[in-house]
Length: 307
Ligand code: CP
Picture 1: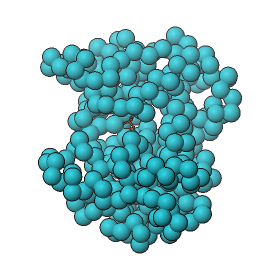
Picture 2: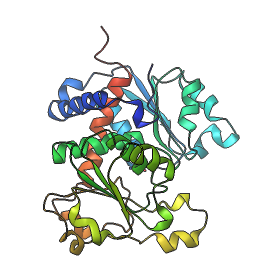
Picture 3: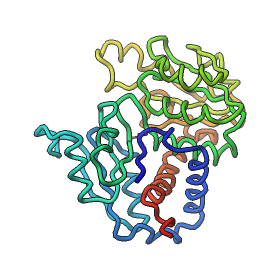
């Protein structure tokens, strides 16, 4: 039995296989309509979500399966003090696979130790968000054709933005990648991420506080929201929240084939006027999330590998 806690739990070859399956699902959805008949997905969301929870649920429904779960801790027995590991042990008796989001870093790994079914980390605190990374990789492949030789700019809250940490880890395995880390000094990439996935691998990178200074060099611009829910004081959040706002004027400085990604939700960091720019790929990215999560469910349930 496999879990997905960290994107590095998957090899590059496995990610390639999943991208191929997701592409086939986009092109031939009818082939998959009964693939998970009689299977159940439980979504245990101790933190708010729109895209991740609903795309997981849509994914299972489109595979012919069923869904159950909760969307806030207050409607579960966590509010009475039940532990994550007890919750996982119980729900693994009701469902065939579990997607879990939790505010505490490491909670999905604790759940996996007690679960009889695969656990998928759907975001754990400021740590990792591996299925967002699968979504990001699938989108980059569809938009750019390849992961090789890209200059990837990551902009905004690189400290608390868990999607950034997982994406850096995943992209560090491809050749010719260059990272540009764009953030205020207070919201830099944590040193454990930078050391393990950039410095130790000798990947070229630069850090800057200025988006204007580097936007013209980028093939991919990954914007992120300043993560209000992870700040200890509101004053710091208010000071930093509008550090970067991508506008049509800034887009004029970018390459004609640069793409803009954002895990969403956005607050102010991308002006809505950018949405009509063909390089704005973030709504396509959110839609891709359903297809790659369908491929992930098939993989973890070993559907199609029965012989
Ligand atoms: N990208 C993402 O995780 O969105 P949600 O918080 O809406 O799930």
